[in-house]
Structure formats: C-alpha cells, structure tokens
Image (cartoon, rainbow, N blue to C red):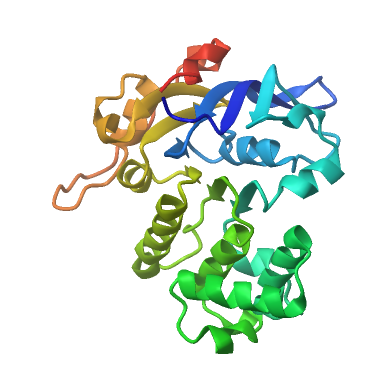
Length: 288
C-alpha cells in the first residue's frame, strides 16, 4: 500500500463579504502518496487557492477550514504561522508561476538558495554554499559557480525556474506543489523544466502536486488528475484515461482543445450547467 504523505478531507477556504461568506474552495478531499497528482481547471476554479491553503498561505481575512488537513503525522489545522515556517521548505515546498516575482531582486540567487539551507539545517556559510552549488548542478545548470553570484534579473525565465526548484528542494521536502510552473516560460523550455522537475521528484521519491490549466501537459506528466470547477472537485481520473472522463465539464474542456492536423472553423464553447454549482459530497475527490 502506498504511503500517504498528505490527507485533505472536506477542505474549505472562505472569504467574508458584504453579502455573506464566499467559499473559494469547498468540499475538497484527496490524498497524496509518493506520486504525481495533477489539479486542473479554469482560472478561478480554486486550484491555486487549494495549494496555498495546504501551505498556510491564505491571507486574512480569508480562513481555512477542514475536517482533516494532515501532513504525515502533523495536523496542519493546529499550526500557527511559526509552525508553518518550520514546515515550508523542510517537509513541503511550493514553486510559483514566475520566478522574477518570487526571487529577491537584491540578493544573488546562490545566496538565496544557501539561505534556505542555513535556515533549516543551521549550517555554516561554507556548508550552505556547497549544498547550493550541488543543487544548481542537480537542476542541470552549467557553471553553477558563475550562476551562484548572479542576480535574478541576469538569468532567463527557464533558468530562474530551475533556480526556484533548487531552492525549494535543497532542504529535502517530501512534497512539492508546483503552481503553473511553466506558464511564464517559452514553449521551447517548458518541457526541459518539467523534465528536470520530474527527474528530481522521482529520484527523491517525493509526492508532487502539479497545478495547471493545461490538460495535455498534466495528462502526459501526472499519474492522477483532479478536475476542479467553482471551488470543488467534480471528477477524479487516471491521467492515462483522461479521454474517458465522464463529467460534462471535463468533456467540455477536452472538446475545446485545439488539435494539430485537425482544422476547425471554431472551437466549441463550454456550455455550463447550474447543477455543477451544487455542493458535491466531499468523498468525490477522496479516492484514486
């Protein structure tokens, strides 16, 4: 039986408003083992909010509620900000969309990676530098000594994302959440970055949550897929069987994908059904 690294049961993310509470995420349930799990859906479907809730990154006045939110033997619902800071990077890490907004512009990239190592392992400057150089090498960056001293504005988008992956993995977390990690990159380098991330996750036996709106990418990269609509999971399927999806929302997304060699005058529009907004049982997303 696969080891369960993360358990999410009936997760809700709620924001207060003038007309009452708005539930950005509702009834979301799933487990994650040492596997690659994809979360797909349109913008605003709750994908990124789900990832941020797990990381403890929902800013006030938003609040996170769950029947169970557990990382291994740690109850995430009981943690304050200091508790989450001890976990982030060490046990669970998150790569965001665009490295130029995530990296400190006035600190060299190498020092930023080394700082993460020093924070979690109380290592010396020399030890942290050595570990950072090894991580730069492991994400296939040539001449890591030179790149170590460069600043974020001096590196390309693809290299910046490799640097972010190195920073997030240097402390050896069990889980990596990647939120649209290739959306800001040229098509030519997207596959390179994904291949590096896949290599690191597989070699370390980690769990991966890949958040994306790109159905083709997720189906070719992940083992399982959760499809989200209006803040909740509407369908769960094996990545290799995405074409067998049954929910009309998933079918509509697949139908709207352009295909090389298959010309159409126009792509079909997704016809939404109000019934999709009705709360589904939390168990919908709980099983593989």
